[in-house]
Length: 122
Image (tube, rainbow, N blue to C red):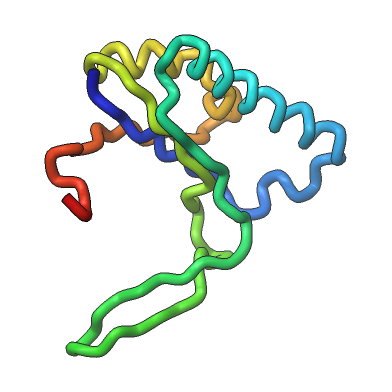
């Protein structure tokens, strides 16, 4: 079985105007999907990322630069991720058909296979 990372992206501030009860309903949908994947033995991990903060590191002209991020002018930011076990891309895509993130028009999920042979620290 392979491991796939589902990278969830959304637009900064998109959910700020929602009433708290609607936000809780949406969070419940994500939790229910994760519980379903766990019950199927497919969930290997995942977390929502904080909406604010973060740092962007980059080496420029040999010097390390650090900037705050994600930036408000950014159209999309990584908002969270799931790690899912599946035999191949076809299976993980089928498992994602009812992912709640896809119920928001235009919100993408990037699916990438994790290369466990090249894990850091091995």
